[in-house]
Amino acid sequence: MKKLIKHSHCVGESSFHLQFTPAYRQDIFVSEEIKSLVKHYLLEKAEQLKVFITALGFGPDHLHFFVGNCKNYSAKELARLFKGYISRMMRKHHSELFSDKLWGKKFWTAGYFYRGVGVITAESAEYYIAHSQEKHWKVVDYEIYKQQTLTTFF
Image (cartoon, rainbow, N blue to C red; front, side):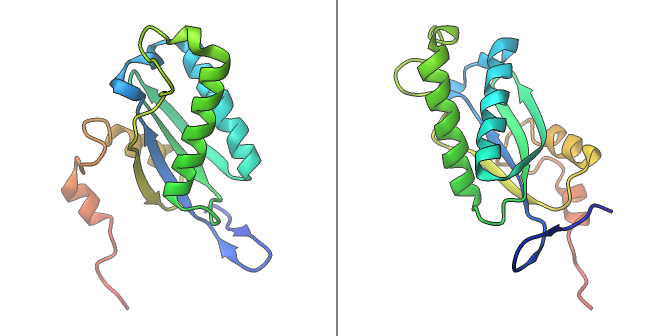
């Protein structure tokens, strides 16, 4: 069992699965260099925020990651902070790598996908990513998902 995180006035664990899509749903993540840079900036920002990236995966046109120890941040705030930082750093230092697909001051779409998740293991991260590929705002395996919810209270 994963250990809980002790803070000054509480004990617990909070995690989110976040998914970001590049502007115009371009397939910029076919480039290993862009993936490497985005991963670097994501980890850099996580360190600044004192949160942990527990899993990370790329599709050709999206980024999935799991962030833990985020008790001080809402999903909305995490999305704003991560997207803003990565966008600024990529456009400022590496715009030549994707200028044929993205232009102006946009790197990400305005929206994002999020899901509050429990304890993250390699298996659960793989499950979430595999079952979120078709449409990020639609439950793909509703029957399986429904079985994993708490239905009986004691």
